Length: 467
Image (cartoon, rainbow, N blue to C red; front, side, top):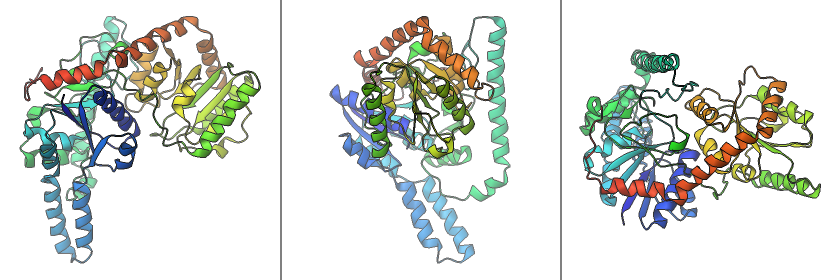
């Protein structure tokens, strides 16, 4: 049995996936240690997982702030430069990983500092992420677009054009950043482990002897980059992809849904309101009446006007119930008086609601998408256009698991018609049941553990540049 070290960023979806994977690996007899720049000790302790915090970057910054208060401005500038150099050469990551000596290192794709700093240790390494195809492939649209492949020459041309526009946009962004006035303000700052700044990452690479040009792919979909030779583990299901020949580095772990997780963001008051809402449905003898769930995520600001349109639909359909998860972005009082069949919560117990829901109105985040399919809940997709949401929505529509709406154009009547179609479409229900079975098979068959065991058996440095 092996020792796997996972390095994760401080984001709920990433933490939930890492915990799920760690439990599956431990159940298979492997030893797992989790690392993060964030202090997740309490959460991991509750999960029974070994955890260490990487806080060397914070320590460098705290030391600088403590010393700089008493320095003359010129000396403060010199001290700031020394602090930056210290942050670039911080040995903490190498020291911790050498001490742990894992058989495999799994690093969140967006923790580039960690990838670069650990590259010379000779340990088999893979990056892990939550997106679909991140490399350009024939017939595969960039993940931020709503393009649905149909095999026609016209659509293939649109796909090629979308990739060309993405490359151009990323290059323009790099040029703007290079000559931005903010570059002068940040050039001397200490570099943090979670930095996404390309200039900072190049500086880290120079200090650590990492061949940045050879090892990174600036034209891949993620911002700012992907890697040319590291295996990429996607926490998505290949079954939900568009048909294409996958990139040699891409491997699909399948959906890592923590179906019995503790909803730590949900307050006791919100949980009590949800329990009362369920009780009312049972007492009234209508526990099977359609339950809808709407949440636009916690990362982006919710659209208050759109939420009001959703509530209008429920006013027209007293035979439906709705739970609104506001993700702390909207005060429930801003929605005015709600009908009795609508429950608005700061944070909703998403898994508990999905277990009973017949439809979810969602922004299209990959975590929510996976959880909907895991519980067999069809989706009405209203992408905000951020990140991979458009691509996720396109895949849901392509596989017949839901419908796509336009949050800027759809009035309450349009939303109502889409919900009626979803609730009454038996073919959609059948396709969702089939996809749910495939999703659950990933965990039942041990697909993620099997893939990681395969990676552990490969010698370090065995990966080659497929391009």
